[in-house]
Length: 494
Image (cartoon, rainbow, N blue to C red):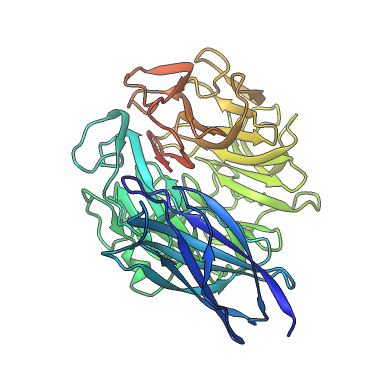
């Protein structure tokens, strides 16, 4: 019988305070049979990704993987994140999620169920949310007490089943868990935590209005007072404040929860100050909510300021959209050709086309900006204008819009820029986050830099100053893998 080649990728968790080295043994089972148990030679360190080739008769569609810790040597406990297996002949790839300890107490063997991945699906290590700082008046940084936190404090109130993604809103945070459920903490005055109350808790709570329906998410976004979740079936759910239809559920009300009307085949979402965006698999963008400054992008600002049902945004000259971001009252789109387009409020140049105007109601190209791989539009936590950020493929950061708090990072804390300007001399940046009036970036070496408003300690350097237009490095943050910026606070994960 001919053999097939499978590539097994083992992703080790980054849990701290444990010896994560291990000697592992694995068995693959598919619709047509199973492999004998095989030794995956060598040790597994914390946060590592290791790949192994396995030769086997054709197993058909993979179903389960059993992975065993042999409980020898110096590795009494091992936190296993997930296992990926690729059929090299067909290109099919399965993910087997674990997110649990293999140990004498917790069980030395785990049998994991496989999930067939879509072609090109991105798989990242599970995150451990460790740090938060800045405003804490709604316990968005630290559930133990109120008052600002001008240095990063550790978070320990998320349940121990792994985090896939982070999102920070005006005064609250949202975490997507490895099992597709969500947890939230911080302000809940408009029901933005999704736990069917308007009470602010002292620790993270489950977004129960979705979990009780058995719904699972694959992406999240947090706006100023509302949240969005992209479900596994390509539909979108929303909850929180809804006075301008920013939930997209077909009605207007103070707060609520429901399905965004009519959206199918969604691949990305973005919640802004008063509006929401959805990017479909076919490259179209749909928008809903407040449209008083043209942030819905369909040239209808004069007809009504509230659209509780999604409308299609004007096209981008035939080019396909790759990513979206929703700001306070403006929106950004990253195209596959590396250019950025923007629309909405532009009184301080946050649209980036070199002009100033109250409203731009159809997308325009941001000037002098190419080779972009990520975008971020500032979602404020107050009633004021915002700014925009872009990360280029070369690792440099570009900013434009309002600069009243030094958020542009390249000049004194006055004025604005209606076209992109480079922020400091930063290089090697891998992720960006735009807070209300402060900025946060993650570097390739796992360290973090901040600048801009610091009135709530959101720069995390132990001070509380009105502004800081100098680059700040947070020395205690190392090996960081994800960042998120809220209105006046920040969160980091590793």
